[in-house]
Length: 519
Image (cartoon, rainbow, N blue to C red):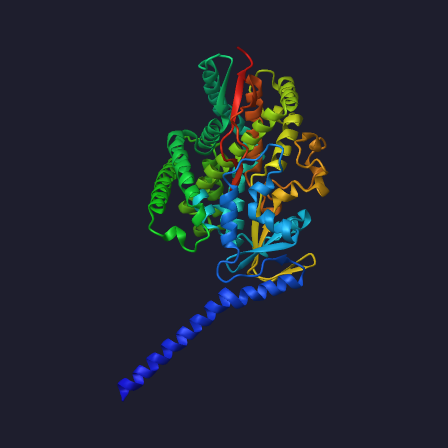
């Protein structure tokens, strides 16, 4: 009798648990998405009807796979290529449209004022946490939320203060000098000794990696270069995993690629931990150490923060510092390399601006290396960089999700909806920039960026990219030094295929014809 009763109880519990689990699953995969869809359509948003489980994912992946390998004419607007599926949805349904990433709807936001409102309200919106992004960058402040982000931002911000960046200008110039010597060697060793074809993308990636290694880690340069190489290897592997990035739990599958990524990540952390621990011991001993590199500034700021707060647990742990160092590498090398590549490619196709920029650089610096004071007088170079950032924004889309139902403008956005803020489309909107929006015209910024408030290349609001001044400083130095020594034109082998993986990159490199100006 007791056994029978026990069996009935167990069966009842199992059935109840199963019913509860099935009910939750049905709600997640069907009832809740349908409810969100109804709320969105009531407010005038249009998109495909929800399809169970995958939503639009099959069509999304197909569109990306078809479009990504293609190259496009230089004169074409790039966003239909970069945002293959999103562009199809917007073309079909208009700017107030959405599509489905599995059971989650994603709204396309193309109003610049709405975008700025969303990114300003950090307490109401948070970043979705794409696993691919975390693996590529190592995490860091980019993926922190709430009080953790506030604390991390307060500490890390010290490393990117303008006064600190001024002291890094000679170091950036040193790295660029090394690259220029390599380029001169390439020209000298070419068949006609006056010009040669090179892939500038490879040189720029090496340059920006060298800059971040020197500016971030000072006398730990050799270990830093090792981290840079490991980071490059990891990026190449993660790019192969992109097609799986929307599969839940993909990173935990014991595949060969996942194991390689895990091994590289472990090795990167081991090298960085050694550098950080050695620097900490040197600081404790009172040894003479670099004062102007990002690591020392970060560690000293962390110590001050902890002492002011009076609680050692409130500062950044060594794991937090490792995360930020990894983010330095990705953001400080990949993003700047991309900005420089697009700038050089635009100067290749618009030689009149190359000539104007060189004349300005000669007037300000002659043949001397750039100085912090002189960089402020490069108006034409700054205009060129700003126009490149408009046409090729490092982050052409920014994602946010409301923590709970929230009102923006006249809209109510329920929790569970993702917002895709289409910076790239804003930057090409003819209503904002005119009918020539797809043309390269740096004169748009002759009066500075204040008159072009819809330029949002590094995000906006409290979460604006913390390294944007670092990126602009380095870009001005590199462009100035290159134009002092070389002229360049586009190679016939160049294929125009911008590709977005956290930042916008030239998928097939940047082959150019390089000429040495001072033989």
